Each structure stands twice: as C-alpha cells, then as structure tokens.
Image (spheres, rainbow, N blue to C red):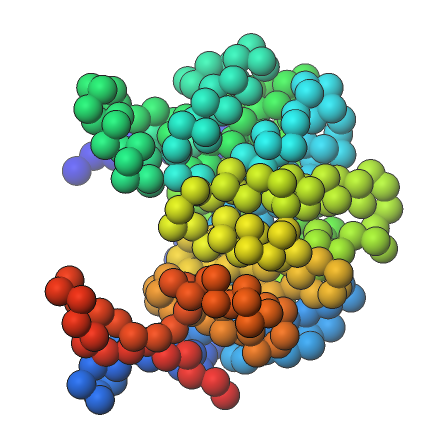
Length: 354
C-alpha cells in the first residue's frame, strides 16, 4: 500500500539501530484459576527536583519516548513567551494545552473557540482527525451524520497552543511542528532545561499527533515533573508558568482528560490538584507531587495500560502520597479482582513489589 512521504518539516525517525533495552523486573501479573496468565515488566522511579533518586525499581536510566507525558513541558513557552497573556488564555484553556482529552463537547468547543480567536481554522491543526475517545461523544457525532475532525484529536489542545505560540512569534503557522521552527526550538530548550538532559542529547521521534517527541531517561522525566510541580527554585517567568499550569489542573481536572474513565482527571480531582498527573502513550505515566518536591515516572515495557494504572496507584499508596480515602476513591484503577461480562470473578491483577 502506498503511503505519502512525511511533510518536509517532520521530525523523521532515525534509521533502526541496535539499542540495549534493559531486562526490567516483572511489576504486574494477571492470575486466572491460581495460575499466572500474563505478566508485565517495567520500571518506575521517584526523583526530587535535584534529580536525586528517592525510590524506584528497574533500570530508571533506560531512555523512553514519554509522548504526551511531556505536555506540561511543551506548554511552558506558551506562557513564558507572553503568547498566553497576549491572546487571553484562561485557566480552562491552559488545561486543554496539557490534555489528552476524550473529545467531549467541553473540550472540542473550547478548541474551536481558541482557533477562532487566533484567526485560525481546524484545517490549521496538523494532529490529524480522530474519533472521540468518549463513547457518548462518538455516538452523538455519528448520529448527527458528522465526521470527526482534528479538533476531536486528543492532542488538539496542545496543537492549538503550538499555533498560538507560532502566531505570537511571527512564525509560519504552516510549519509550527518543524523541529527547527522558533516555537519548537523553545519547546526543546524547555524540555532540556527541566529534565537536565543536554539539548544535543535529546533525540527526536515523531509522535502519534505528528509533533516532535523526545527520547530521554525515565529518571530525567521524573525530575522534570518534580520541577514543574515544585517550581520554587526556578527563575521567573518559568516559576510563574509552572504555578499557572498547576492551577489550571487543580481547577479544571475534567479538561485534562475526561469527565469519566480518565486516570489523570481522577487523580487531579480526588487530590484537589496536589497530584499533577499525565498519561503518555505506550504506558508511560508521570505525576508531579506538589509540596513534596518529587516526581514519579512509570514505564510498562509492553505498553499495557492495566499494569500502568495499577502500578501508579500502588506506588503512590506505598510511598505515602495517596491517603486511604483518596485511594479508596480511585478503586477502579487499582489492582484487584478481574470479572467477566457476567460479573463473575475470574482472576486478579496484582502489582509485584520488589
């Protein structure tokens, strides 16, 4: 089947090469009838704002593609450059810039309003069309005889932020994803500075939404989120930018994910914004822990979300960053019994602790 060549400005992946992938420990198992049916390997790390490791398991120096887990870092130039202030971005709109949203009306309508305010159209979004992740929104779109657009893409808020940054910098909006464009150069610098990885060591890949994505060690990702959530040691305007992003997540948790079935939204909502969470595709997850000076980063080798969800909750519980009441409120995301469609308990998912 013929496929079109990527756009000339796209971050083309490098040629396949031999890469050492650590033999990570088993972190979760699925049991059925007292036998192991499946198991998942991975790593997690809790780091502070200096980059020091506080706790963890597995090889946290293994480099990963965080994908959407870096959205808070990618949003920093939107605020630091003055673009958000110039174009009047409110806290709810900033939450969208951090979101992997499910394309409910509250998400899509805000994206469309932002585009109109910036003199842009849905066609300017280069993230691609995607059916809503929310089943109700998907059904309503189908019943209305409408097709999904790029505004329904779960990354449309981030891309709208990129477009606003390009507009503010006077850059070509048609090339807003070019890794060498003014906006993306600012994004790359922010990721490097917050993670502590040198810019020339930040190798690029192409994300599912066509934006550049960065390859960096899991521990550096945890460090970056620790700094976003605890920016007291950062200089202005970065400190103010981080505080504004944290406020957006605290005030509008549903906008960073969904009204239902979103671990990110549930974590932020249940903890009143004390936890600053973000999902990345292929089972990467990060949590900035406000007031504790810490960041958590998780990666499940096989990309299994069920293992990722359970491990995130388990680590936050065992390290004392989720109270019993909060953990109980997040029960659907925890390890535990597995039931079939008839409601019968057929097995259990467990987190394996070292």
